[in-house]
Image 1 (spheres, rainbow, N blue to C red):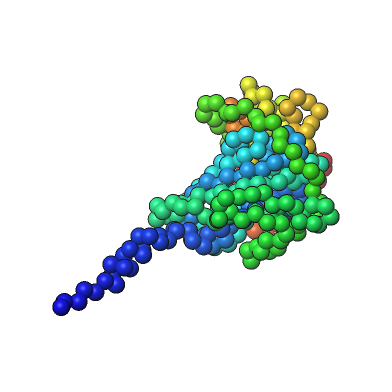
Image 2 (tube, one colour):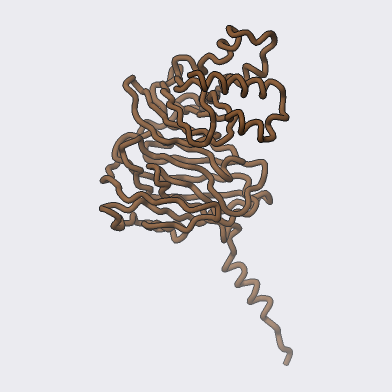
Length: 347
């Protein structure tokens, strides 16, 4: 009687029945950053070039999310879409494949004084440089409440979505403190859905004006070059800020054009240090700290109809600039930095 060897067939059946995920080790996580918001971080990335991350949350009042690109996220372009007052989607794209561990962004869900909010769900779909797209594991750490006692954990039916209180192990780039208090959570009313595609507009900043300027740099010309960016839509205080890594600017931001509301802020080259409602209709006050040595910090203000990029007037301290590699760049950059330092010191 002829024997039939069935192991290959069994292995094939097993392989079909038990497919492996393309992102078996990749994890996207949210944890409190100790500054009234959350840090979005990633572990075990392997060649990621794009992704869609959805955050479902609750706050005690109507809020405008603020997303600041940091770490790995600084190498990628972030686009934020507030689906409603309780859902925000972050799309990231990167020309350079993202690998390893690190921080993607800082996410502030609520205004200053309203508490950090509660994240109820986190999902992430990533695509690598080989064209493979799959879901990544997700973890959520919400701030403890009641003097450090563990808050009730929202239910989830996704095994890959872990929600827990306490401290999440972070990448090797450093550990972050965890907040110890949190107010009660109430579901806010949803904003009306956004209709039609967004239009995008980028204003010219002071550094752009220096690049395009032809002529003699008289006192009057310099004053014109350093005129506020954004007109009535945005006011920066102080008008010139040296990016020493700790100094803070205050931005008073109003809806632009036909927009009646601001839906979210996206910061590049810095992070939010607080957000609060202003006295005017639809007005917000954003406290922002540029990255140390930053030359190009901007805030994108997204409304219901358009997103506007406002370059901010920042420059490295003179000593920091002269010690770096930027000093070998175009001559207009050096002129801008030297003049910006003088104006900042005279404010």
